[in-house]
Length: 269
Image (cartoon, rainbow, N blue to C red; front, side, top):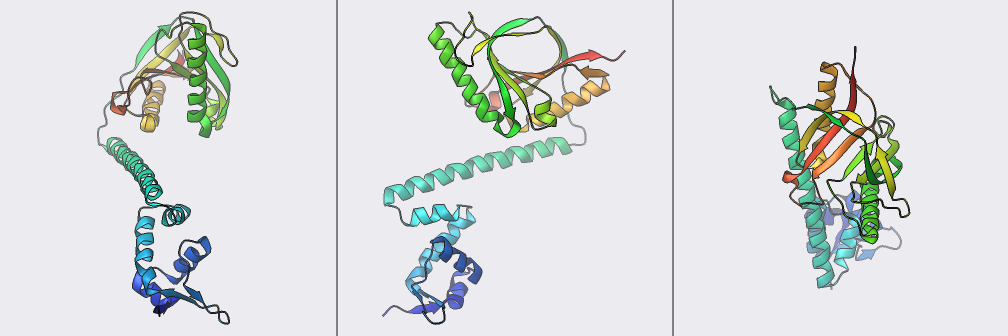
């Protein structure tokens, strides 16, 4: 006969609290071997101790409870795939944490490096573009979808992309959390298909700098550029422009990315 432990005893030997065990029961992750019909007391088999310890280790790695439930009931192949997916998420989180630590170290340095800013006059240019109203939280997904549309339309039209792609972001995206966004590519000829259409970018006087590396800390470069504008009495005169001189389309090596950030400006008299 299988030896049973009360929920308190099981909590003691597994280092999982009674509250946690009840939660795992409700979530279908770790079911008691027996529930007393009159008292409702939960009892666990000693053979369930290793399972509880496995669950605890996966929770220590921040695997969601629902995913652990899937994993425990999966085949060997499915289990391996689930674990591999979670390890990839952990690696991404570690990379994000490392990048954040590096950014903090630069921000907290007693004498952070000064930003290199240039003034550049850009003549009016016609590009192939997609524009739309976007919520700030949806910017990355919207950008990816819009660029995929541009690429498909360019291929279908038989023209070529002649330079780095870019984006134009209204100030309301940052101040209000939603606004108009445009992504574009210079092309060898006009393209029209669905949302994709030619767009003339007006001539503009840009205060321009380059952000090096991944986009996770691009806000730091924005902040430094904003400081430069204030110190030099330059007033923003339109939406910010980003040009992805080297970006995800060119290489998976984020350290090699170079993003030009340019704000149309004029000087206070």
